[in-house]
Structures are given as C-alpha cells and as structure tokens.
Image (cartoon, rainbow, N blue to C red; front, side):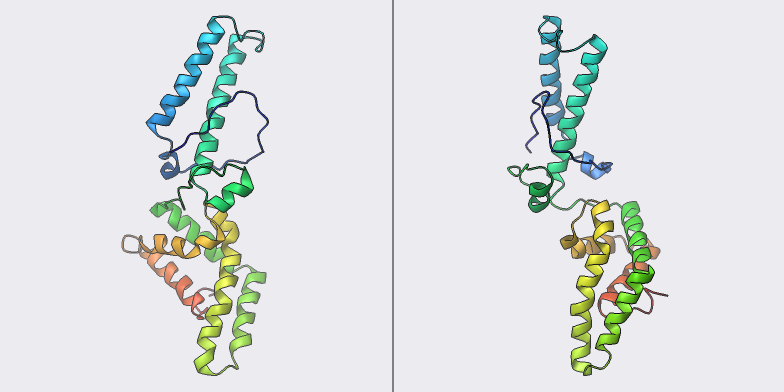
Length: 212
C-alpha cells in the first residue's frame, strides 16, 4: 500500500473525510504508522536544532502542527484506499494508488444500511415513482412484463439508494456487491434475512412487502 507523503503546509483540495469504520482503519498498517512516526521524529530533531522555531510560535503550536499533518496523511491514505478509481479521481486527484475496492460491512453496519434503504423507498416521492413503474408495465404481455419491471426498477432502486450507499462508502454501481454482503449476514440475523428478501422481491417487480 502507498501512504500519502507528508509535505508540510500545502493547499490540498478540500475533502470531507467520513468517520472510518474498523475495517477501513485496518487499511492503515503498522508500516504506515512507522513511516509517519519517522517523519515526525525528523521534524522534532529539526525543532530541537532550532531550524523550525521561526515557523511556529511555541512548542505547543509545533506539536499541534505535527498532529494535524500526521492525521491529514492518514485520512488521505484511507480515502485513497477505500474509493474506487473513478471516485478517487473526482475527489482529490490521487489517481496513482490502486484502490482497495468497496468497504466491507459488519453485521451492524449492514443492518443500519438496510434499514435506511427501506425507509428511503417508503418516502412519498420514491413510493410514487416505484408504483408508477408497475403501472407502466401492467398492460404488457406476461412474457414481457417481468423483464420490463426488472429493467425499470433496478436503475430506479439504485438511484434512490445512492445517497445511503455513499454514506457507507459505496458508489451507486456497488449495489449488487452491497446486497451480497448484506445477504451474507442473513443466517445470523433473521431481521436481515426478512428485509433483504423484501429488497430482492422489489427489484423483481413485487413491491407488496417493501411498501407495506
């Protein structure tokens, strides 16, 4: 893994970093921490030698600057490693590092994401849109209706879930990956099994359970 190098006072593109999950924090390795500490030790030596005292009003201000620089390096490195390349290019220009792929959900975060997703579908505007898609397909031949429902509902569901997916570190294109991760917890959490079943039925055209 590549760590974002600390370059001192630079003007970086503003990024609002999320609250990292335990799985995401695990991407910050002992090697990364050692590299950051080595940089810190070098700056402390420069301070002790009197080379940085003109740049900082006091030892407390210098220590605060060190903490800020190390935290920024850690946040930027985690940001790179938890975003896909297309998101990385848009958000900060850090395109050289290979992205780590979608984050991994815990049972708790899977339950939380699923709850927020189901609540999103029940919002009046979204509910109306989903029911409207079913209305459009009701007069089609049975052999075509099922496929048309799936073709129309899948992008609609993906669009409605985009905000929730981003909140948990995913992109809209990660929907099926997210569904598979959530399904993996079905055996240990009956509520997840029930609700992910509602979502899968909805994508296939049955909204009776989703919008109840």
